[in-house]
Length: 222
Image 1 (cartoon, rainbow, N blue to C red):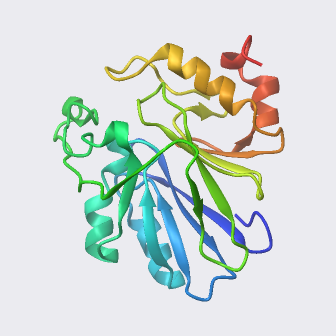
Image 2 (cartoon, rainbow, N blue to C red):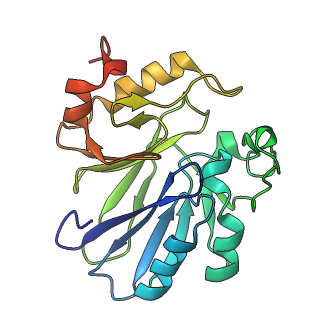
């Protein structure tokens, strides 16, 4: 989907868990750089799109490191090369630990490639291109301890992982979940402008306004 004259977020529903992976790029960038956000099971369609469009992945940013968001990292690296993978430091051990990434409960367990670097709350990252779109990393723990939202104020978009869905929110009954932190994170997301388009880890795109008005899990929080 084109969000501005040049900024694009292309979503792919992948694997048995119908997890969304994203390719983010600025068509004004002559170098054709892109970011991958999450790399689910069966990432072939997303990889094929990158290859077909001649895009060059600069980073793979993980909203969080549960198995359905990291399982395709090995295939991604095999087909696209050594793309640096980044996550929040609180999930630095998740990729290699099936109990932390929850794949121990869905045999066979997943041991995905380790991350190369860590992101922190408030960190600003610029997508290559003439538009110079800046994304802020927002720490939104609850579903998992290192959950990140990638927020671009200029384009009014937020890639939110499994924190907020259309009409629902992420689960908080996993071993490393925290319901109280989830409440605070949802309150934080509700401070974003109403027009902000939400790209969730599962399901369809939505907006802050739509969720503020219709999401039953946000009653009393907004």
